[in-house]
Image (tube, rainbow, N blue to C red):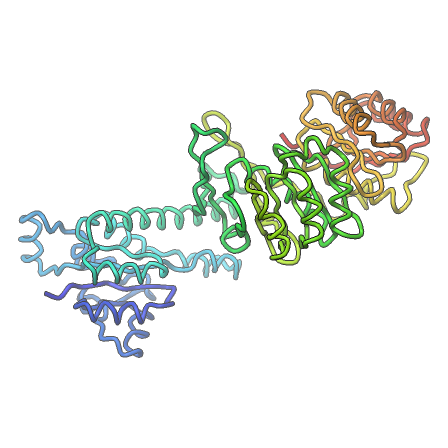
Length: 512
């Protein structure tokens, strides 16, 4: 007995071959508009939708499948005699498979700002058919993804079309329509309500499960926006854990924050413990490691470029848990193969790649807080206001830029000391800024690092001059901070007293 499949797709990749396979398996094809035309031109026998609906497509295609012959055919229960009797009475024929993907709303809003065009690319009939077919998964297969065509044909041909199989596709279908409506609602709120509507939807696509969450008793998984990880992230060795992903995120954001420069960031528990930009990536790694080799043990290293064999041999001298680079050569991978516990990942191509998300959010008990994503402006340091009598020279300005960018991506309260393009001290996550400054200097002293001549950056203003006094005692000669304290005059006075350069960026970069 022939079955019937309703096929109406915006993404027409693979649909002709899919329908040919359905026909071979005794399916009769019902189709609409452009899909019907393509199938007929390709030699696939198909019935046009208005032969089923007994009503023409109308209102420029706005109404074509919203019809009882369509939804009755999909939704009536095959296991209830009363439904079967009523279907016969109303001349409603069963539809056993629905293949629908929706009007390209995302592509439309990326292509145009024309609201009339955008409105016309909001699908109505498509989601209705998807939801109907999903609701009646007991008898109907719902297909919403072109990547699933082969699996569906395999199920039909090899007696795998079970209720459990259809249930899996039902779940996919509701995920599909939920994500679609979420995208529309978010867009409308962005356009008309400054992004802060009554509802905010966060939708991610699952990339993988992690072995567990932060701790073994917690479940964990990675979800992505816009295929960022699918397209750009590659596992070479090991398995990325929940904690690995969180830690490498912080390291990559810092290392990739300097364009194509030879930046290397070493991080531990999401915070930088080493950073440098030198002539080569190998030199950058060596200098970055000097900042805090104790914390670097078992840490994450983000390399903004290619890890070669020579660099791998140097890195292999200590235990590193994770290395992520734009690329790790096969020779370098062979060096790391000797270490069982090391994990290797690639991100990007010539340099590490950031997604540059526009939104940021954080879970709090009972909900989440949402904001625009923070980032340091390209000219934020260059355009910082000189408020001291002394100015910084070119190398000093580079150190100030590095210190400022690293500080902006480090847990508050924090201070960062940079000398000759390498971080020499960092204090982060402290309850007071003076504690952060003193903790950083204490650590540098323990490591035998000379802070004299360094640049100092703070992600928020210094409330008192005590941090400047401590920095001067250590030999710091250049400082950058946002400014904005009621005691700014005292800070400026202290800088002039010690012959320091002092810049106010006038932008705060808290990270909590």
